[in-house]
Each structure stands twice: as structure tokens, then as C-alpha cells.
Image (cartoon, rainbow, N blue to C red; front, side, top):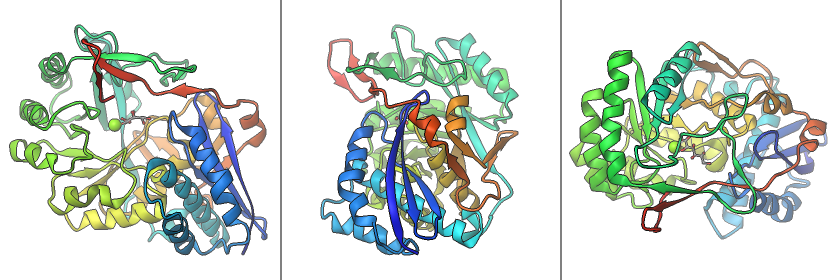
Amino acid sequence: MKIVDAKVVVTSPGRNFVTLKVTTDEGLTGLGDATLNGRELAVVSYLEDHVVPLLIGLDAHRIEDTWQSLYRGAYWRRGPVTMAAIAAVDVALWDIKAKAAGLPLYQLLGGASRDRIRTYGHAEGRDLPELLDSVRARLSQGFPAIRIQTGIPGLTSVYGVHTTDTDDKPVPHQGAKPLVEDWDTEAYLRHIPRVFEAVRAEFGPELALLHDAHHRLTPIQAARLGQELEPYRPFWLEDCTPAENQEALRLVRRHTSVPLAIGEVFNTVHDYQTLITEQLIDYVRSAVTHFGGVTPLRKLFDFAAQYQIKSGIHGPEDISPVGMAAAVHLDLAVHNFGIQEHSGHNALTREVFRHAYTFTDGHLHPGEAAGIGVELDEDLAAAHPYRQAYLPVNRLHDGTVHDW
Ligand code: GCO
Ligand code: MG
């Protein structure tokens, strides 16, 4: 079965998404997500100028071989642009293979290891009362686990606390320049343990609570936060330090037993080598979309499993329903599944990308449609073209740029 066409579709039904659609000579089509938030067009060019011409004429069934030739053949390995582009090809080919077999993708990955997929949702508030209301709203949607983020006294804007559109989804900052947010680590470290204390007091010991430090702490600050959160038994503390320095996690680990989750910005297994073999983390966070696809993420999970480390796939709004569908199939199949982040998408996005996966009582299921189970409405996608948008930049009170 030969690839006869591959095209890139960019659409913005609320936020930007990049999708690769691959067509074969048997008329089967496959979709892959290549969305890299704030740097979308770099991946579009990588695909259109350097990948699509290589795909035409290839045997669509040769997924591993195609993956290896795109990864090794480029010579310039790794990096988010390269790996998002390869991911889109990989997922599109898995979609085609599963459609050719007449099976949902999870069946080709070994079949279901569970009945449904536990997810966590986002609760946020500019202050504590708003956060508690937001937790109540997530509980009423059935979420068994909730990530809590709040405003910090003295700061005007904070990661994870955003303006929302009518569907309760964060509105990306559009225009030619990123928004500048402010940051004060000491104010944050003073405030967050009080937030956990209040949420536990209100909702009791059983609710799984998560928190994302978004790469903002030094190792010793992360160690201190971990210690102070221990009494409230978080499910995980995410991205406590910028983990390009994997060795830094040794220090954090020596000081706290809070479970650690890392990896949404990682692209390959090499970013995890020390973290996994030394058991410095508990959950790997990479998304199918940013890690080169289902093929390498499955290998990462199998590697992590040998060290009792579980999956916690990144599932923010900026992973398209195509990327989410691929994730949900993998979640159902792997034994060492931990939890799936589920932000959901606005109604228009769900029309552009009609998907078979379902969300019921806080749990996802990929559904039984053949392939990954997503249909792209190309006319509707074209009616909502790309809009320039950036992630924010973070500055300390003295103007120094900090990690966002
Ligand atoms: C998360 C993430 C996201 C990222 C976003 C960047 O844990 O969901 O931190 O919110 O910030 O995906 O594009
Ligand atoms: Mg995160």
C-alpha cells in the first residue's frame, strides 16, 4: 500500500492546530498531530518542505522503517520541531494500518489493559474561593483527580490561571508579541502549601490532587516545596525544575517523597535516561505529539516500566484531538499507565476534529472506530485559518527573564 499524497492542514478553531493527512493508493487516509504551541509554522515548513516529498511512494505499512529513516536520515536529531513532524507521520501511518486491519489502534498495540482511562482535570482560581469553586466544577464533571493552580498574592498573572472562552477553555494570547507575566518564587513557595491545606480541608483525604510548578524552581527550592506538600499527599508535583539538567533531580529526590512527574517538553528517551535508570521520577509526561509518535512513546513506556515508572501523558488544549486520540489508544494498551491529563477542547474544535473517544465520569475511552477514530472536516478547518499566537514570557520584579 503506497503513500500517494500527504498534506498539512493548519486551522485555528480557538487555537492553532497543525495536522498531517496521509493518503494511500488504496484510498485509506491517516491523520497525525504536529502542533507545537507558539512555533506552529516551523513544523509546517519542516513537513511541507522536507518530509512530505520523502513520503510519496513509500509503503504505508513500514512504520518503524519510515520513523528510523526520518530520524536518522535527517542527521540533525531530536528537538521539538523535528520530533513533532516525525510524530505526525508516525501517527498517520498507525491510523492507516489500523484502518486497513479494521481495528481500533489499541488492538494493534496489544489490546486493552484496562476498561477505561483515569484522567485529571484542571482547577484554577485567581484566589482561594475561586479555586474551590473550580474544584467543585471539576468534581461535578466526574474527574477523579484534579490539578490545582492559583493566583499568588502580589503577582498579576500566574501559570495555569487564565481568562477563558465560553467553553471554559483558555484563550491563547494572539498577536505579534508574547504577553509578559510576572514571577516571585518566594511568594509562590509561601502560598502553595496553604492552598493545598485549604483544598484538603474542604474536600477530604481521598481526592487525588496534582500541581504543576512549570519549571520555575531550583532543585533546593523544589526539595523544600516537596517537603512542605508531603502532609497533603499530592498525587504528583510536576516539572518542579527545568529538567534539562537530569542530575538536579537527585537532590530533589533525596529530600522528598512527593511523587514527581516530568517530561512534557522532552522529545526523546535520551532526555529521560538518568531520570529513569536512577528512578528519580515517578511519571513520564511526554505527549505522542512531541515525542515522535506512538512508536517511540511505546518504547519509552516499556523502558520506564522496568523501573516501576508510570505514564502521565500531557493532554493540554494545545494537543489536538488527533494527538489526544493517539494518546488514549496508548493509555488503554500499556500496562504501566498512570493517569491521563484531559483539558478537553471547545465545541468548534470538536466539530473540526470529530472524534470517537469519549469522556464519561472522569474517564476516557478511545472507542471502537477503526484507526485512531478522528475525522477532519477540511472545509470547516479552512474557514478558521491560522492566527499568530505565542506562549507568555515570564519576568521577575527586577525585569530578569525567568522560566515560564
Ligand atoms: C500542562 C502544561 C501545559 C503547557 C502547554 C504549553 O501540564 O498541561 O504545562 O499547560 O504549558 O502545553 O504549550
Ligand atoms: Mg505541565
